[in-house]
Image 1 (cartoon, rainbow, N blue to C red):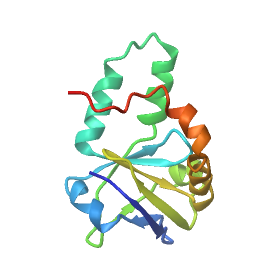
Image 2: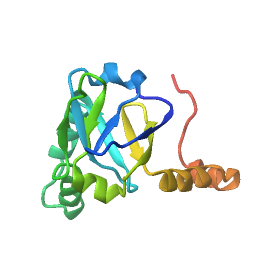
Image 3: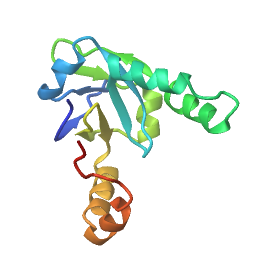
Image 4: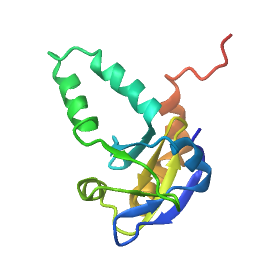
Length: 146
């Protein structure tokens, strides 16, 4: 599982070091693609296959389905960490997420995200608004059900 927040730098060849705690999950490789909030998403092969199967089962006649396929699949690249744990981030994905130097690598359970410091700070500022969180998460049922 990918948990926690880590700060890493992109090197001159467009590679980023995957946090040591995340590397075991990527031994078999994975995929990097566009995220939904101007970040990048990195998924294991297994989770990417699950996402793909769900997208593939959707109605192709639906325009939202086609847009989702374009967003995630047309921008997906296979990744395998090298011996020191770096993965390459393709230039078009770095451009999309405006990633140039410093980054934040943020665990999201089944996947992790890569953010610029400015955009990650904006996310943190939003999440620090306790009153907004009450309204934002009210519709989600986080109670333990058996």
